[in-house]
Length: 355
Image 1 (cartoon, one colour):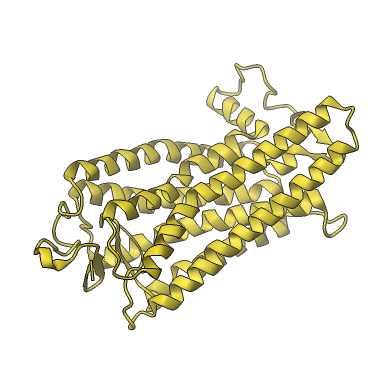
Image 2: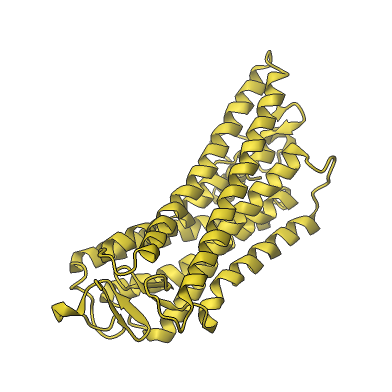
């Protein structure tokens, strides 16, 4: 076996070297050089200093501007809350532990950090799934003239939290467990070991299928149908330049949404599943840390893709920052919602983009 399993930890280095120490008690500089831990600190600090203000600003402008408080935007607020969860309860802990070179808060702190980091990441993931479903229902109208209301939006938000808790809670109660991962300065579910006491195998299969494969299928199906619908509408109005422009904008937005989701979660899921299916295989701590940090970066580019690229949200943010004025000359805060929408037949690009 190329790793060392201890009580509540697994270090990806054989104890034959005589170097392995508990990641709760000693710096793990035998896994990676000290400068790599400092690089992790710099990266996490960057995510905190950029992601935290953007997500807080998303909540602020939604609260201040009534025209943003429409049912289709509720899920964006939920997404911002999830990203704040990761920043406040995950990133701050990782910054401090990486600075010290080991998980200084002990096994209980590891379980708490792992729970909140997993919960925040899962709420963000399922928010993107619900967002895709909502856009599919509104644009493609599979249920006819269905009116999307506040109650439907709130049900979608409740669904994201139920699904997220169903992933984050089991390791706290004996179905798998939270242990330090990668460079041992952040915690996640245990897919490294075959410890029968924790039933890790069944949990990893459950997590991979329910909390990765199914979301990927739903997102690809929803946005695939949405693009087809928009192109059908554009084909019926080929002479309209605005229609063709709207179709290109919608397609670009959908591609960015899908790429953002895949960039955040595919590296982590693939590497984790490879480690799980190749128990005892040799891998570096750095290898596991890189995809984990890809998923953390979603707290920054989620609001960029889903909020800042939306004209209505962007204008409201600018007017909020500039004390009610928009120096760029776009629609000001008193503009009507219809002014920020480009219609494609009965389909508006602002229904496809997240607002």
